[in-house]
Length: 402
Ligand code: F3S
Image (cartoon, rainbow, N blue to C red; front, side, top):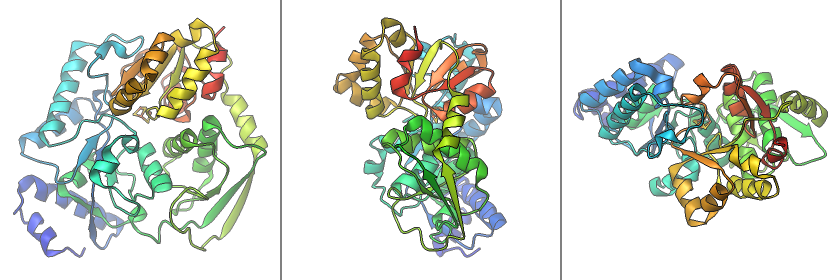
């Protein structure tokens, strides 16, 4: 692999042992995939920060890294963790053990010691981070959260591969990643085009199911080109989350949304029918009265909170009392300033910041609980844990409660 003089200097340990080791990992992975050079990154977003997902092995790895003096060399933010840091009791139906609180605290201290910004959200793009870091279309970053990766590439035009948590961590320390995949403009040009014939604009739930269909069908290494009417911000977020959970797509080039020219390399055209989507929606619809109405996977937007408030206002009291929203601390504060938090709490809504039902102990202890959600990704992971889950858009959720 070609290395610049600066990169050779880092590799030789002139910026410290830890940064040299991190760069060595990036170079090795890059060589394994055939990358010919490295590129600087502007930002890293580290996933795998919840003790519930990384366990003691992950905790030891992070603690040792921090003890070795490793520091992030570019602005680096962190994904959600196993509980709401300011209100650990916020997760429903969970009694947090002191062991989890202690271990999660150690993980957070290790990341903070390395210079991470503990935003603890999977939607860094909704926070002030892109503005603060000066992220612009065409910039390269190393993000580890699959839903944010697909959103960055597909909606923002920010380039990132789908990095595993440790690799995003190493890239943040090294300040570089290998030039490969989503960083390469040629890779970003689709070869297969999907068009959905539909009589309606898709809501966020339909967009999630469409994401499942594409992610399980698409086999080409380049991203798919998608022509489908998606109804706003939440639909784009849920489609991004679905293609990253039902499959491993890092990008969908969405006509009219994704910045940049998709090129003219299309070799295959696939037409999909709304009827197929509607049938899958029927399979996933809640056939039960839910114990929990869940919004905010990935973490909720302000627009989703407004929609939720409108929907709950028209419903009976019991619906609000069963509603859980997971949200970033940053957007929670914004919603607080706008009076939305007070209004929603007034209807009985419970907020979980810094965490979610999936990366908290909830998913491990909620077998038999019935959850209705507008998120395909939440459906995907919670149903694997034995939780009974059904999908419905925000407007339909309160109507499920009698
Ligand atoms: Fe975020 Fe948790 Fe969903 S981390 S994407 S809310 S699984």
